[in-house]
Length: 147
Image 1 (cartoon, rainbow, N blue to C red):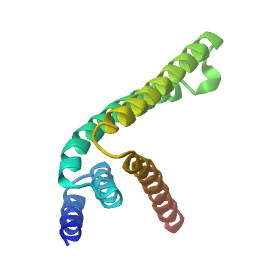
Image 2 (image 1 turned 90 degrees about the horizontal axis):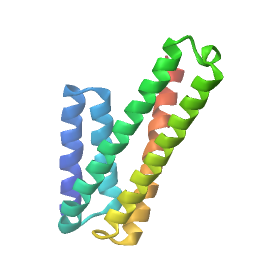
Image 3 (image 1 turned 180 degrees about the vertical axis):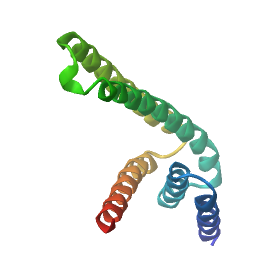
Image 4 (image 1 turned 120 degrees about the horizontal axis):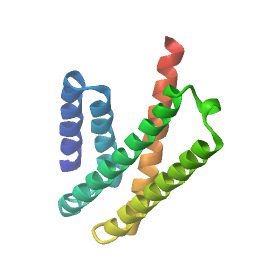
């Protein structure tokens, strides 16, 4: 009963925030609700889980933002064809470093979570994130097809 009430409160809050905030905030709220439902965390686990997970999300968002900025700079410089070989090599090096930082951040998340929630719930988190992303992409495709 408590779980259902918690989920209803989260969904209600998410719906309110949908009307007030941008699409990124909407997606974040829906993702939180989805993960909460899938992991079925008790209150102690939730208290320890969410700060670790939110820190990881902030780290990943920062890395993705840098990556998007780098790609935008290439597009503004008339695309990949206008790059010299040295510039392309630098871009590839930066790309590989960014991918390595993402991997390290993901590894840190799992290592930190091992201290606070059972391994099965960590696996459920991995699956929940993949499922959420699939659903999100499916909704985006459906919207584009309608328009």
